[in-house]
Amino acid sequence: MPSGRNILIILSALAAVQAIQPSAPDPIAAPLRDLKWGQLNFLHTTDTHGWLAGHLQEPSYSADWGDYVSFAARMREIAEADGQDLLVIDTGDRVEGNGLYDSSEPKGLYISEILRQQHIDVMSSGNHELYKKNTSEAEFLTTVPNFQGHYLASNIDIFDPTTGDLVPLAQRFKKFTTENQGIRIVAFGFLFDFTMNYNNTVVQPVEETIKESWFQGAVHDQEVDLFLVVGHVPVRSKEYDDVFNAIRASHPDTPIQFFGGHYHIRDCARYDTKAYGLASGRFMETIGFMSIDGLSTKDNQLRPGLISPVFERRYIDNNLFSFHYHTGLDGSTFPTERGLNVSRLIQQSRSTLQLDEIYGCIPQTLWMSRSPYTAANSIYAWLQKQVLPEMLNDESRPGKPALAIVNTGAIRFDLFKGQFTRDSAYIVSPFTSGFRYLKDVPYDKATLILEVLNKQPKILTASRDSIVSLPWSLAPPEQAAHHNLENSRDVHHDWSMLDMSTNQSPMYGDASPRLEVVPGYTTTDDLGADGDDTAHSQINFYQVPNCIDALTVNNGTVIPETVDLVYVDFIEPYVALAAKYAGLNVDVPRESDVYMPSTTLTDLIVHWVKDHWSCAA
Ligand SMILES: *[C@@H]1O[C@H](CO)[C@@H](O)[C@H](O)[C@H]1NC(C)=O
Ligand SMILES: *[C@@H]1O[C@H](CO)[C@@H](O)[C@H](O)[C@H]1NC(C)=O
Ligand SMILES: *[C@@H]1O[C@H](CO)[C@@H](O)[C@H](O)[C@H]1NC(C)=O
Ligand SMILES: *[C@@H]1O[C@H](CO)[C@@H](O)[C@H](O)[C@H]1NC(C)=O
Image (cartoon, rainbow, N blue to C red):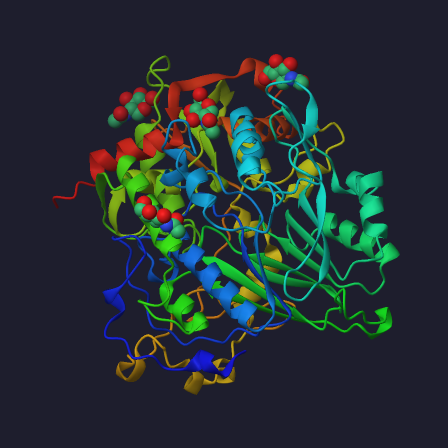
């Protein structure tokens, strides 16, 4: 990179010019690793789930989408000054999971205008865009046109709401040449083999898509320097292995860059020496950076056997300290006018939606997986022992004990000590699922059903008489990525590799504060243990079961003979399958009924918080 990038610029105070949301905490000055630029560079977001305001309680992730707009613009300027290229990628699940998306009517009213302010070069849909009819229609009618020519849908069709015809959600693929280097790219946009979409969309299994003539035509093109496969697909998956093999069948040497997501983790997978895949976390915590050097270009064609590309990656913590450092800019030179406008738009939208309205005050932080699920500071223990037993109660079943089953994936985020706001409710429990129940189930059968649900996924998916083939997705997505969880336990991170002398913050100049190592991501992937831009101390994660249960009207003495088996309606197909295994002979969808009509898990949580966690104390 240009030598000027590490110039120290003296700036009085970080707080002087900021774009982040007014209530967001200042970032912490932490030791950073430099980016390694190449001919072609990428910025990547995935699974943002509406967190475009950034994290208002976590300094490490406190930058907002407006800051990211400025960051991408500044990074593009740096690339262009060196004759390099920068492409911005997003791989879906932009919806559901934060008040900024979920609390408007209709949902997403403010998000689409904010999102479109970023120049995104290649993007795809996630599964969350397709659960509901009107969500995928909003995608088709608003987001796809907003990103015309950049939004790719290689394996998704939709019934056009105006004509009723089944049409591609967006164009299948595209071919383009980068502006500065002249790199010829063929790009695809996939979704994993998702089956729980509403029936107005059709997701074609990836192994079928790669047999389509348009796909075969695209991969047989020999005038290609790089295949770019973006998608809402785990980078370690059968789907991406299939795409990799399909491309390699006609291109043994052409470099391939994959971008993926869905598991909410940082990861980089190596398919072979010329093909890598990056996954860039979740919830606007991570801006993935990837670079490739040694590529062929339209004016400089290398013999296939001589191509030996170099892939580099960094997982950038989404905060201004990192953004300023990597661009060599400071609080006054970093923000762009457009970026500042976007931050203001986010602020206005949050204010209109009253997302800072306070429902209560959280006395201590409750974790999803940073403490064992039975511990006093586990969000699951809190639900199991307090919220569900106290709040579940259907008027038509007075005094009838209920055994409630909630999948752990229904909870999406930790609850930090401090204010519990309208936004917190959408963040911790964004889904609109209500409850259903089966009447008078023998207690031992009900607990057996829970046990089956918590057994290895194999048991259910191996079922010969399985009603449908179900993907195993009851626990939080982070946990599905066993690879990463296992690694995170016992890998030693060698921070001596960091050259601390280059880590003077340009923001602070001589008045540099001590660099502080705070807990955060400590990623190990196929390129090593040096991927995170920020040096963090390690966080321990604990496994949680697929489902937790709670017994209501349990006055502690008697075990009931029968219970109402209550469950979150989203998991009904799984409960039906588990009931068969448990030997409960009922037709679950037919014999079950709505429990506490028009009440969601989120409603129960909010009522409980208002009743118990007053801020006055
Ligand atoms: C979809 O419909 C539901 C129920 O009418 C509504 O609450 C939601 O806001 C709609 N979502 C979108 C994206 O239009
Ligand atoms: C989709 O499901 C609805 C019921 O939710 C049904 O009425 C409709 O016919 C189905 N459409 C298709 C194309 O299968
Ligand atoms: C930023 O907002 C101002 C005021 O609304 C507007 O005049 C200006 O054109 C906007 N700039 C950009 C780059 O969007
Ligand atoms: C406990 O539950 C049993 C059975 O429902 C009931 O007979 C008993 O009165 C309850 N005891 C208390 C203290 O509520």
